[in-house]
Length: 243
Ligand code: SF4
Image 1 (spheres, protein in one colour):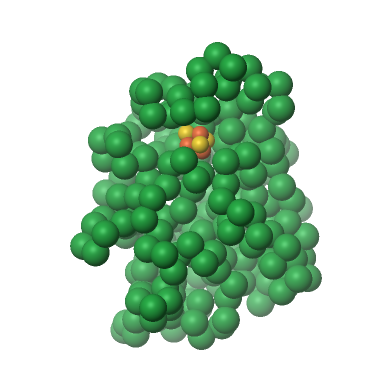
Image 2: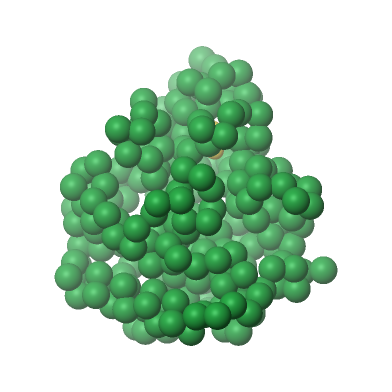
């Protein structure tokens, strides 16, 4: 059974949520012309956002992070996006020297040793290249949804990040069923790992399939407490996860 069969669901107000998401993106593209980027994780939500950007011919360039630890299925989405929509995807990678130093000092499996080392790995492989991606930008676009986890329950459609940039979350009020209904209706390309019970996909060492009834993000950093489960990309300093 595919992820579309499993998750796509009709829900009242769907068309309105799609229109609103497009309106959020259109307004953001106008207000931040030339200084906005979609930071895509290549997950289902971000694929929907990329589809909306391309469908409405919005001037929001698409960029992603290749941490060096992604599944081959995730990386394969980059050329699929470029072919399907005719738009380039900029890829930001961690510094080679920094990765070599981190691995030689802490090992390839450091993320399992402590939360501090896991966050340090995210720092080297995600936060530093994200900082480069956002250099010069006044706004960025994400696929965050309130339903994704308790720590994301209050995600607004737009907010200032810790650097004073605007962060737009056009799918903030979408359900998981909405995401897959949109994907099915518009034949949006998606990661085949979603068909293998991985609703939330990150780096390969830090992602596992979930069992029936498990929480949406239970397969991410599953060995840690729920409160620690952010990589720092979407957590404000006041919440303590950027350290
Ligand atoms: S998700 Fe895991 S492998 Fe990826 S950067 Fe964070 S700790 Fe490292």
